[in-house]
Structures are given as structure tokens and as C-alpha cells.
Length: 110
Image (cartoon, rainbow, N blue to C red):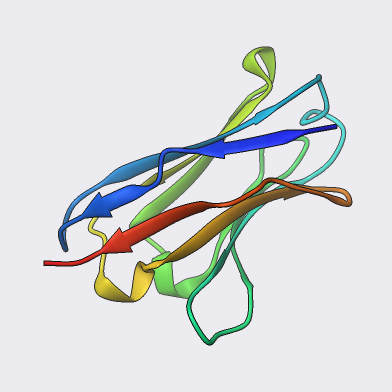
């Protein structure tokens, strides 16, 4: 399985981005999918996840700002990021089972 993450970029504080994670085959319906991020000098952390039945989790620091969703028909998981803050700057990765996407860089800067 290959995961292709995209949608990162440079955005000003308060702006929005939507990340996409596309799988090479239908897999998102069989396991929980997570979005992780790793900021410079910090450990990789779980940001949000969506379960096989649609239940979602977001970490406290992005609660109310980030939303995760899944489109099984398109084999794609999304991370909608609103009200971005400087501290959201990181490389964002999607993961399912033991498979990781290649990462997409999000830079929040004025």
C-alpha cells in the first residue's frame, strides 16, 4: 500500500489548509487512519484519527480547529485545518496500520 499525502504549504496565522492522504488501494475502511505531525526538534505526535466506523479523535491542541474525515470511495482521508497557528508548523504524515505517507510540510508564518 502506498499513501500519498498532499496539501501542505505556506499559510499565514489564522489561515486554513486541507491535507489529503490518498491510498493506492481500498484500505481505509479496514483500520483506523491517523494524521501525525513532527515539528523541528520534537517527537512525532498524533494529531487526529478516524476509525472504521467514522469515530474521530483530535488532540487537545487542535480541538475545534482541525477536522478529520474519510472518503472510502476515493480512498482518501482529509485533515481540514482552520485557524492555523505558528505552533502548527510541522511535517504532517498520514498512517494506517504499518504504512506511512511521505509527509507534507505545513508552514505557518507571517
